[in-house]
Length: 214
Image (cartoon, rainbow, N blue to C red; front, top):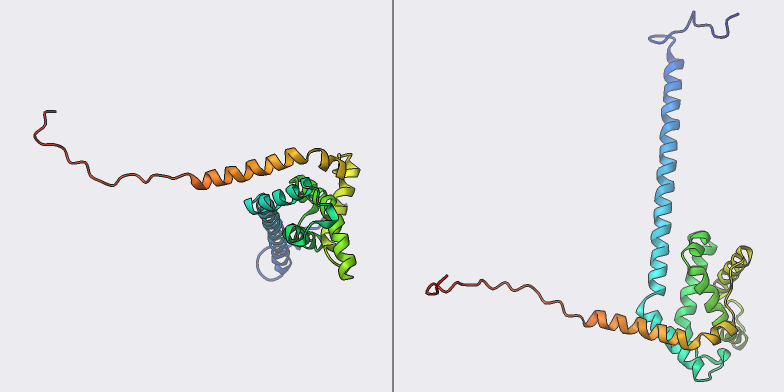
């Protein structure tokens, strides 16, 4: 019994169209697979670069100064709900933007978690939630910081699932002095880096003294 009949198989010339159709299909399939992996790599690279930009902005000197002002106000006895908006709005806007991007699928939530951004988001929500909730009530606008709140909630749920210690008001109060010192150190280092003067190499040509004895 013949499973495959090759008696009338035509590879070249009339009747061989089936072969070239099959070859074309294979080429198209291989091309599509290659494009898929290329697009996947490009998307992964773009996500990593975007995450790096997020982390760099949060670690910037500007944010360190904002954080320091917030912490000093709290050390001075300002209640969390009474923090002046001008102090925390830059951080609120930052997390609102990051949360909006993540919520729409433009930022990978797992990458945010793995990069450490999750802790800072959840911690900042604990710190600023009283002032945000008060602002919502005062303006009758429940949409204030909605993406920030969503992202903090997602990160908190992920942390609970993984058994990670989450931040809270008591922990923040206990490390207030250390946090202020850390921010002051970060700012001082940035200032010192800016103060470093790099001397350019001299372009003067040294002319030997012809009358001198070598």
